[in-house]
Image 1 (cartoon, rainbow, N blue to C red):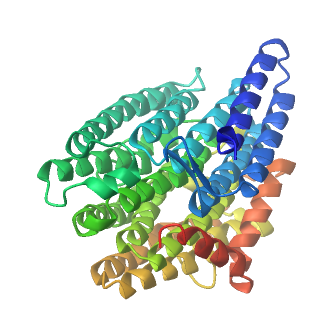
Image 2: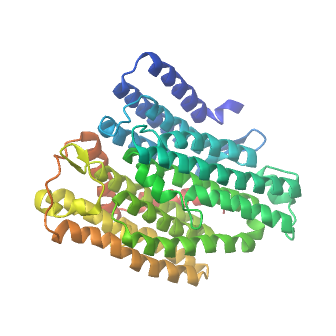
Length: 469
């Protein structure tokens, strides 16, 4: 197999994105550029699916069942974002051809991240993703909030990169290797310096997944960024960062799981508890979804802390369900318009059932799913996560997770109460965007009907988890 065959999807995405960037300079038809970017992302996903498993570049780059699964999820999240962008670009003042190009370059960085089997490859992928995200966060130059969110994200992102690089230098200094497989074979289990390196790298990666106490950027960036960008932040980068986090710990330091498990357990418990209570006071739906994402990261980290097949399998299943639920919610947020102005306050949903009963039912069911109420998809995601924790004797994580789910149900159910029982607000504009309706109905359908035929998603989780066990 030729060496470049190993990175064929990445090469294709890079060359196609670069070509579209040049085309955009001379042919500023944003709808055409967006459509072409959407098609190339879909084609890249097809290339990933049919790519054989392999290693390359001195084992620094790996294509296995886990990386292919995560890459497809990332590309689905990116494609969904482009559909959101197509319906809202003019009104949100992000009507520029660079948006879809930045999405594709960010996707490229994430694909490199999840296939990296080396500390340097990991950092290259992270920075390619981060540079695109910094620009996306501040894309609306006419909005003070958007500019502020971009600056905050850039400054704190630079800090997290510094923490990560400091940890990388420690790991390299105490092992003499940057390759995950070689690190696993040569490190000293009793080395304090190596443990310091693990702590700093975990801190840098915890920022990328917005786990407490490295979450401080999330609510402000989610609120300030244009809504399609916020949706993208909640989808693809989260999935990619979790996958990188897991591969770094499992591939490099599997033999010392008892040491880093304590870090993951702390991040998980802190994220679940903090998000459950901090979200209660929120009135802006995008800020609410920011705290919701922090809480869901806490649940996902339970699967990572288990360090067994069931834990990884439940983590993959939860990531898929989390992706689908957020596509449903953010596509609906982009349909919340009155007199052609976007609404972001939770109270704007009051009385939605009177005007749009069908949409009210679907978004209410999505909120029930986020709360983990059976028989919706979100319940099964949490069920598999908690069961894997119990099987691994991590009872504290399971108990805290269940309590946090009960508390967080308050702010999800409050939205349902506002939709059905509050005095009706002025009617929203017609929900006539075909692209938003498409992804909203598909994602809502998966959330509602998951229990009817869960096998495909369960099989994907089983397929991806085999990589590590």
